[in-house]
Image (cartoon, protein in one colour):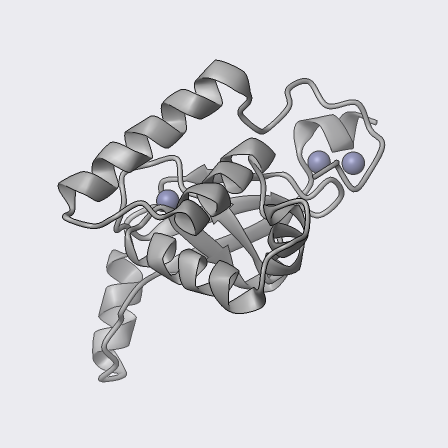
Length: 158
Ligand SMILES: [Zn+2]
Ligand SMILES: [Zn+2]
Ligand SMILES: [Zn+2]
């Protein structure tokens, strides 16, 4: 999954080789600890997302899945599972998925570069105000996902 712009980027966002294998191993252990099974499609999808290190559209996951590609339900079912386990976030504004690099099951905030498409997950600030506003509107929050758009340092420098 190449950058969508040709600015020089200081660091590649994704994992490769030993660090990729180690990250997949950790996730496998977390899934086992949760009493779930790491199937081949689940492993392949999380591997592709960690390798990319940035949001990937489901369509591109299907194409990269196997030499022949994968059927959409296979990829969507794997994504759904990984999302439920808190291992993957869906970035609505990009209609793409990204591997979570923190512990699962949390509110999330993403800094999204509109030029190269690289995202960085940051810990969201206290959602106290939102919680209060929601309570005032008699609204039950099921989750908070902030998507912050802008330009990364590399793209701004170019
Ligand atoms: Zn996360
Ligand atoms: Zn950028
Ligand atoms: Zn750029």
